[in-house]
Length: 115
Length: 114
Picture 1 (tube, helix red, strand yellow):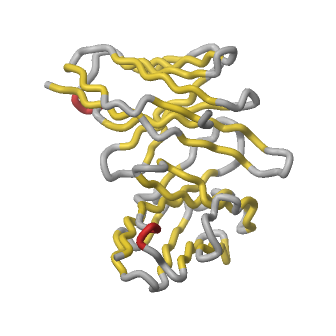
Picture 2 (picture 1 turned 45 degrees about the vertical axis):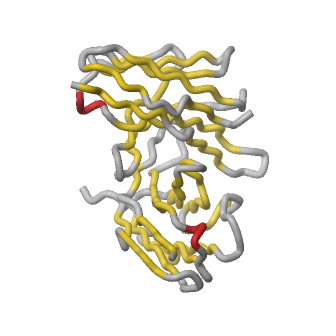
């Protein structure tokens, strides 16, 4: 079975540029999560969706960050304009339900470097 | 107090050793608990859920102490392949605003040495 698919795997760009990260969740999973991981802060939840609707975006750091889920099989996380402090690994994860013991399935992540 | 706190390590142990990690959490209303494993430059993967009565999966044992608000992971007979970062994860369920609260610890790094 295909897992969560993220693209690109690596992105290097100059500050000020727009960055778009993409995610395809596991088919049938109603919940999609975007995380950011850095050495300093660990893994942080940015936003999550239920049935394509954003439920909680309180983890989104600034207005420069936005996320969309136009359909059940695709989501994007956009940073515009990007800054060097946005450099991190961004993970997308999906889960079939919000049941207490339901694990999250992570994609391979996108390693983002802003120069 | 941080929401989920772990000793960052690293724990350097010889093969065959027994090693234990602890994790404390601050929200007493937390409902469910997990240990995830993350290999270097890889994504986190679920290792095991933690049940109130404690649970075992092969060489791995997880325990929960609600009164003291900590969970533990015990690894017996360590293998080289156990080398990874172990993340403690706490699900505080739905807040009053209806949002889901899953919090990851920063992880404990384990290196098993030949």
